[in-house]
Length: 310
Image 1 (cartoon, rainbow, N blue to C red):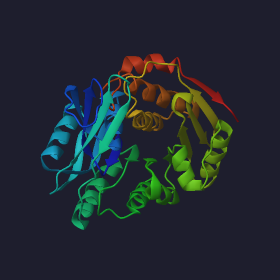
Image 2 (image 1 turned 180 degrees about the horizontal axis):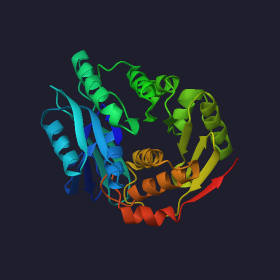
Image 3 (image 1 turned 90 degrees about the vertical axis):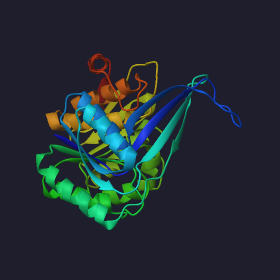
Image 4 (image 1 turned 180 degrees about the vertical axis):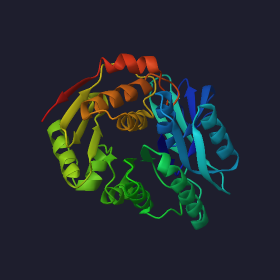
């Protein structure tokens, strides 16, 4: 079973508009509501590739009940700590005239020490049944800066692999706790190492530096230029086919889901990267955020190329 941690869950709303204009009334052509937050994108995609998934974190209010119902309808087991405040909404506006996206992300409601204690109680209950744990995204107000580190230590003590996808100070403290895998982009590498790599060679060297510091797998997404994976098995570069992108939001989360499923299934490093990239690319072919079709994944697996660089 894959257990996902989403402390800052949301109702994600995708608005399709003909053209974004300021200082006027814009009519929305179509709306797509999904259970959101980076970790819930991981949850949905992991379930779609056939994994059993339990989702944990914080939910509250009407939006929280709505998110829970969306997860249950997707076959995901919700095990959330309930809070009194309303779960946030996040809006993604797609300009159909340009294909560009603008996102408006609400902050999460403040949580209390009692909420944190309840989450930890639930997490300790589900951890023994977990094959892999993923921790994704930001944290709501009231969460200690080193809280992800505490969750990672619980996973390490239980012998459970844990993947973390976050940024900023959270990422820096997370790396200190030595999770099994991190998935930084070049901006996040700069936050960790103090410099921003530009070329693929520089990205590989930066990932190696993070790996040598005790992180088992370092995966760096390069957007349309593929991805790099550095681990004990070596350095691998993956490339994807040129596809017509429908909605790329959630593709990084889909990659995390692909890696989590790969670890659960015992794939080697090259297989992990190939599968994770196929899943990530499949997400970009769909309008809903954090959604894939298995037939697309199966087709793309044969079109993703993975090269061992060293």
